[in-house]
Length: 65
Image (cartoon, rainbow, N blue to C red; front, side, top):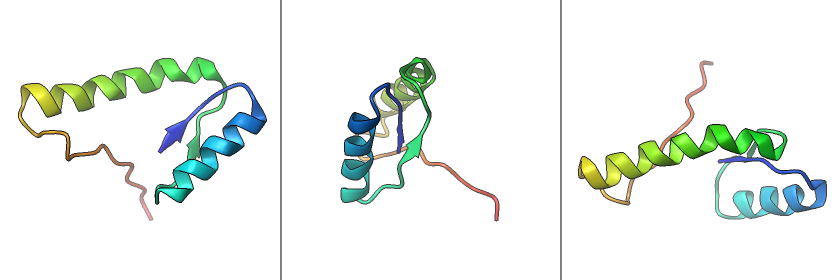
């Protein structure tokens, strides 16, 4: 799960919360990176609502090994 922000202490808290719920935290750096995350949320909303995939879906990151 991607996250970004300015305060290092806050980012560490968020990183821990992401890990606690079973996701891999991926730090995208400063808060300015949020502008790249927001369109990803819109893709999720569009696929869930307009194309009928519902809320039980997620976007994922694939890594080549």
